[in-house]
Length: 90
Image 1 (spheres, rainbow, N blue to C red):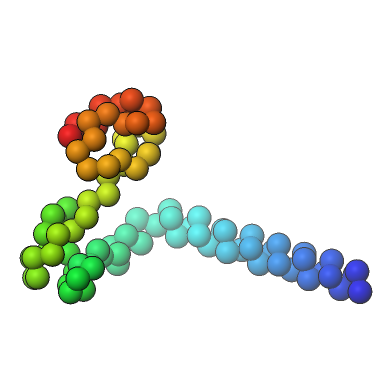
Image 2 (cartoon, rainbow, N blue to C red; image 1 turned 120 degrees about the vertical axis):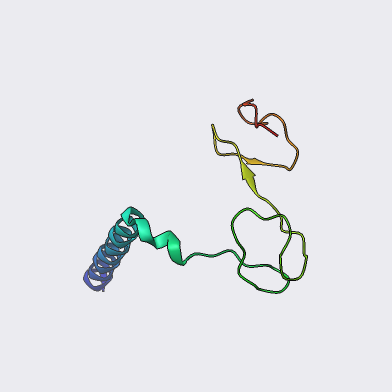
């Protein structure tokens, strides 16, 4: 029984390793982002980059902003990062 469990664990480790390798290869490809499009949460229409309102239905699009220095998520209107103190430019 222990041998069967050990064999299964090794198989799972190899499977996870293969998935991680595939993910790393995908991230190196420049074209993977081309198929990714933001959509309006209200009407589902594809959005152009960095819009504040949906051009189709007028719904407000929430902007998520991150600190350029440490990567912390910033609330709208924040002037300084609460994690590292970097000026945000807002």
